[in-house]
Image 1 (cartoon, rainbow, N blue to C red):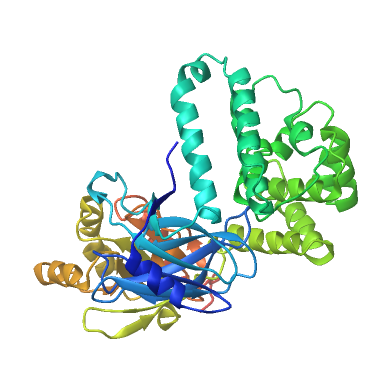
Image 2: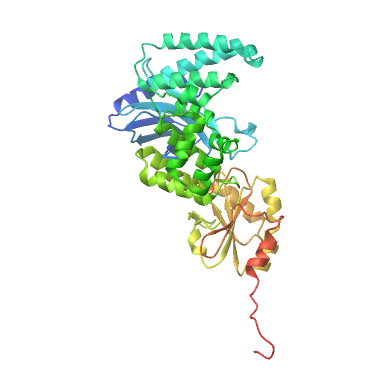
Length: 473
């Protein structure tokens, strides 16, 4: 288990942070090695879909310094993002924080476009700070794992974990922060759930009589998402699932579905059961046996009628996450510069198909695929716009590549802040999308140039023949 936050005391940063007064949260920091890059303070809008929202943004200056002001009316876990690197911390309203964003050794990353968690160094924390408490608990948990790893391997760690749980509750009994109390209890329950294979009904064990539901607490929702992973799907596979299948899939009946989940699960709390249903609908969207229209109808019902604002938001975010890059969905618009600095928007290409390519000059598979595009452009360039978006770290890298490859004469754009990469959820390159003349997705993702994409190009660009009859004109 890896610590997510480290502690260090440096007087200079402490003075900066404590001198700032604001009703908002202020984060000041150093990020040497990331000069002139964008740094974002992000959080998840909800902990089911994990839709990312940006709370504040700044640019790291020439000395590595940055300052972020964040509106945070409640305690929440946020992360600072630079490119695909993320460092987490917990923020409390009207508090200020000083951090160091350390540059990791990225040469060991298999896929440099996957998000990577790094350890933030937090400066000047006192022993009452939430981050300090959580770090202390993390260190004790790490030590416990190291001492007892062999017992976990052979499945005999239950008694030791029980003793550790009692010791932790006793050690932190004096801490009154409700967020930390929920964090501690949920973390200990997650450890227990991870090693206990004999629980007859973990859903009822952990959520049958919820004394406190904490949908914004990461550890609470980590336990929830672990226990209820594919839970509704598993209920639908049971021998006694015919009524649930009827209410959910055939009728899209909210009340009937809720009652059947209660009956089959043993859960009684309406809030928990609705949350279970939301998670289930999110996971069932791509299950062929379940009707997407029914899923949409149930999500619409929750979004309009739920008494819990967070559940309305989750339903809305499920629609956003599942539908925005689907076939026939509106392709996300963007504005990016070409090598001359001229700005181009996706909407500029309306009226033509767009074959969108995410690549980088260091990516060998990207360059191999790109060799096919001149031939495809020659055949189909009058009806299809070829647009290649560079995800290189510098614009100069793209420019050097284009100087060496003058025959590559289609549109090349540079995604400096990587925001378009995030818009299109690029996790690996090369990745392609095909967009129709109205700006809607045709293939998401699309076939690569060396794959079957030319067959699609032939179909969408062929001239429709005018039908004639014998003797007709």
